[in-house]
Length: 206
Image (cartoon, rainbow, N blue to C red):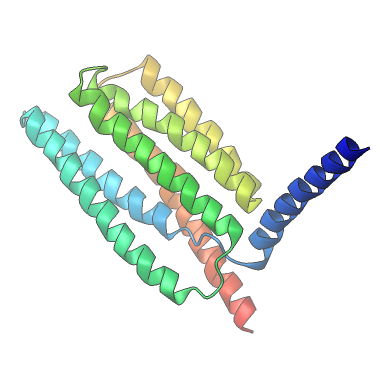
């Protein structure tokens, strides 16, 4: 009898957590898409710059420094912006915390794949793009579920499909293909989410 009561209590707790996530997603805006646009623009600029550096036979070390400096600086700037935003946001939702954790973890994974993997010689630098695409696909799938936005989860299929193409057909063109993927599957969704968040904010203020 005690076991049954404990199981029921545990099930109720789990259901309450799920309900809280769903309610948080509906009541508050947990993601206005700004970081999709932010990172999309920075990575695309770095990709195009890197592509031009390869064409002009700039040293591999210089190319590596381009990514290390740009990604590190972008991460620090994002941290500063997030702190300021946190002070302005009065209501911090559980769903919002989950999203921050998800994308922070994904960012760390991509940083490790982008730098540690190539420095150690574990794989060719051109393999960074499909590997990161796989991580992004997983992040988009989970992000869409947390926010209850189906089309955001569907984007994961395009990331994984692109990863397959980049794995099967590697080459210098991978940088341009990945840049196009970033613009289509990250910046564009970011713009859509940003516009939607502005619309929702007006409705809340009305």
